[in-house]
Length: 468
Image 1 (tube, rainbow, N blue to C red):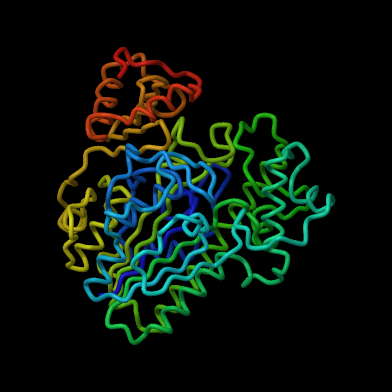
Image 2: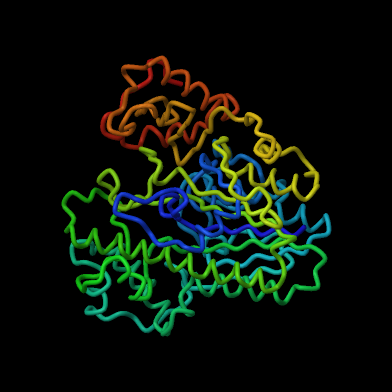
């Protein structure tokens, strides 16, 4: 059996038709929806650690990254990112290494430039890895520089500062020669992935990982995709302000949502191209295809534009996850078992009948789903920076690892995230914080606790009675 793993960066779950619609209206995803009809659809899938690189460390190894022991990375050639923003530890086996050792031909097609920065090693174990350059601030070009008029077009004046101008300068400089839809990033990634399938038809069995940075910002899409959602001209808006939107021009917010929706539909179209290539090559009967995202993105939800780990919210933390089995076995099956990113490794290894060389933290869920058994998880713990989230059947807990800034939401409430009930249910908050600590191995690193003390509390937070 062949295995294909497809990961989209910042793909909101509610933008896929099978999961519903975002607050601003339905997004057109006919190919994702067709895939869902032939797949096992998981409705409660969550990351393990966030953002981009920690998430991929968990997916690529099946090991927990939380609570970021030895995770204070300060590496040359990269900015100081979130805790855990570093390479895969040398002592951990990667999924690609394990499958290659078992006789799989392995390939990676990606434009997620963070994975390929100096000191990173996310291509370990791949017989072929292809890095498609130019996303975001990847220094793939050094000129020509943008004129002031070009900067004014791409970046609203009220969002301009030294950092944002530098960001948009590199983003647009990277795409100066782009003239047709096929030149955009998602089409390039999925076309290259389809080409890999053609070029490796002689493989007895293969494992292909396809990583699309789209629909991550900047939301630079062909105009016809944006016009599907907003068919009027106006100021352009393609990036997050990482701030509240109450003072943002409503037309700019509408433009942002239209560009993001257009980016999702662009990804959908070219995912359809990839799936059609698999059909033409006769691979749908002997290939398991897994589709997921690292996280979502707030596009004005709860008065915020950007992605953040604290306070955590479903539009960022609740991710899509679907599996199409060979011959579309189990098509139409839906499961509400709790699963996390590191469980993907365990499920793939089980399906491939491969034993990991060392014990992994991920847990396969395939047998439970197929046989209708209860899952092995009654909660999930997700960490981003110095804040941790614990989600159960009823509760959504979020707080900092030093016990401060506690938020608790009752998922049974009509509008669960309208108000924290941490003070009303302090016993529940304490229990879930204790669970977070237990899942961290009993303790948080001192440096992470110190970082938590420097992080501002979210509005409406309360402290736990017992601090670490």
